[in-house]
Length: 101
Image (cartoon, rainbow, N blue to C red):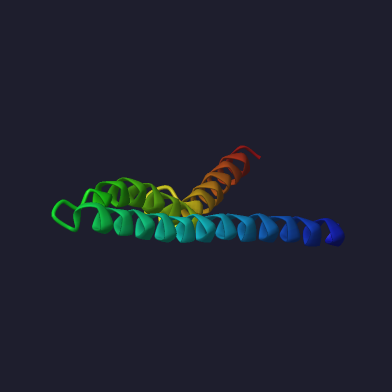
């Protein structure tokens, strides 16, 4: 049983590391591509009209949502909320079974 528990912890930790690696990879890609687009924008028309900001904004919104999920910053239905709700429901169920016994 203890080996299963260690293996389960290892698998969860590995999944977490993979999730973090994916986020940081996307962040670096964002920085490099937006920098490249800003350079193209500057070299083509200067900064008269900064069209690369539209791309930065749209992609940035997606990146923010990915960060919220990766770092578990969702204040409404995050992992902590799920665990708390499960504990509460299990306690309620145990209380009901005790009443009938």
